[in-house]
Length: 189
Ligand SMILES: [Mg+2]
Ligand SMILES: [Zn+2]
Picture 1 (cartoon, helix red, strand yellow):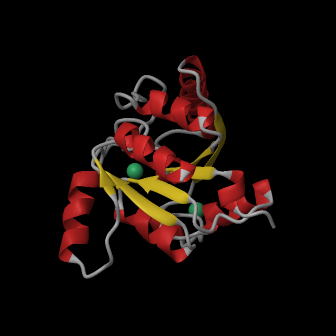
Picture 2 (cartoon, protein in one colour; picture 1 turned 90 degrees about the vertical axis):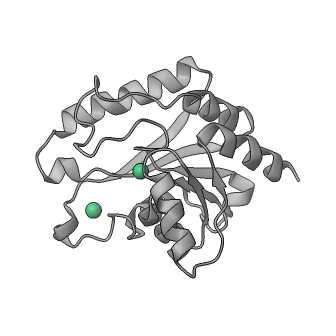
């Protein structure tokens, strides 16, 4: 299996990383609003040779707050806006289940990461996973990826949780734009 460093895959959480999050879920195209600088960050990753892949919990599907059609429209908007900014989103993987469904794909489960590996026929070990929630950090760690935290979305709260826990340090950035700037520099070393 080629490893992810040669493939340069990066995994991004969606809500709170690429777009503004809402505790009421993002249910429609209108509610999907990119965080300032995030689309340009995806463009920078694309130019730097990264395959940008999204791994997202979408329990609103299981809760029947929206359907697959609405989600496809939202993802079409995400991909189109990223392309208008000069970027490209290679794949969007999501968990449609409710937290009490007991599935393995809902983060902090690693099922989405397993799906991505199968789809791309590569290992994700050591590749970056940018998220705003503890679930993202936990999934990344459990599967041997490098977690990166952004302070947008739930990120500021997650940063406090991490400070209170004994877990080892996770790099923290204000937003995806500043994270990506640094990760691209590191990947060129
Ligand atoms: Mg999130
Ligand atoms: Zn699931």
